Length: 372
Ligand SMILES: Cc1cc2nc3c(=O)[nH]c(=O)nc-3n(C[C@H](O)[C@H](O)[C@H](O)COP(=O)(O)O)c2cc1C
Image: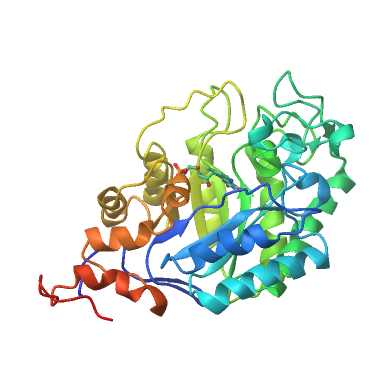
């Protein structure tokens, strides 16, 4: 079937070849033990591996123990965790052909949380919780204890932790790395003046607040193989007066572009309980479009995009190079196949599932009996 769909036009970044522009957004599963992914992840990642998507981004994976959002978030700070991820990636690649990225993260002051289905509050030490770290001793909200402000040595260690985790991501077989600098986690906490009150080289003006992310990016890029992409996920705005905003994001995009960063995944919010988000279909696409217009960096739009024609329009009109879906993919891991059908395009199918297409093949006659 030939198609002129923009969404289903293949795309390449370095040696990574994507069949289409549909990305499965990173989604925490809160199902790891001691930072080790397990059988749940075989099933979860496996279903997306055979879904015909352009790229799957594995959930926020911590670069050190305090960097986990919850006690049950995965890590890549030791070799056992690398081996556990390798088992999942090997499995996914044996049966499917969706390229696999992993999101490397540090939760900062939003770490040590209970799982969302247990309420999400900060877990006390009696439940395995820990003292969180942050740029400054400013808690996310009044329900949380003060985080510890990182020392200069602590910051340097975190840069090294990201680099070491990127090395393990490569060993585990991931095709790409996404650095998580969005949603109010540690790197975003450094970017935003609302959470970063430092007066040293890592706080104050834009240059100082962006320093840690750029150091992390450079360290990851230096370790991760040159033929594999490294992208960054940002919150384009805090949605709070006086916080990180779209102009800051555009300025940062230029700095990342100058470093050959492979893509910017444009999300928003998560830093402050005071945020006022104008939720609605595609509510972050305008932010992404502004970044796409202002720079040459490759962009991914995300947020309440769940209709094939909506996704097609976003890519066709140049608002983003790719689109990512999170909840829509949980609801329908075969979203990409359905979108291909709506847009008259093709997406990769495993042989075992090819017969799903039979009813839609134009050459099939209405009274043809099903093949044995
Ligand atoms: C279950 C779940 C887990 C998530 N975990 C992550 C994560 O690990 N990293 C991240 O950057 N965003 C995470 N998100 C946010 C999504 O990647 C996405 O940006 C957000 O849900 C908006 O997209 P959607 O409207 O298609 O769901 C998560 C969202 C959900 C629903």
